[in-house]
Image (cartoon, rainbow, N blue to C red; front, side, top):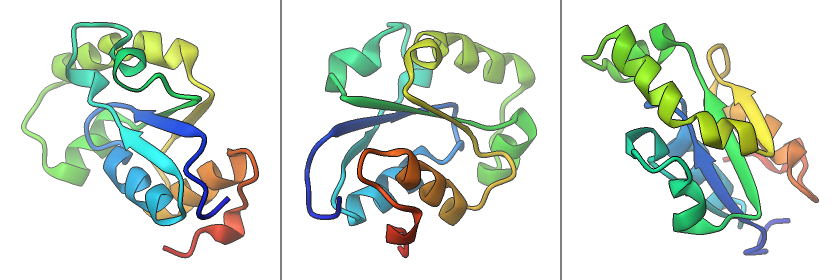
Length: 125
């Protein structure tokens, strides 16, 4: 699907789940992908309002992993609040992937293979 700007893809998840990294890798393959900071919004369907995506990707990761990846100064209650804010997106996502034990390349490969016309072999970014 490289070179094609469709479908419109939105990526959501808690802080440090890999949203911006995945968006960059998918964009490099020609996908129209955008990360949405839904975890910071009090509007449950902000992901729909901002992008009206054809495909919604939800990246999840454990509290420990998110904290370690970005050296976040937060607590479990804040992580749980992000998960609460993301509930609507999780319930409506097309692709749900737990990135806790995955490298950025593994995340991109798994997502690319799940996208229409995508192949894991496309991911060399």
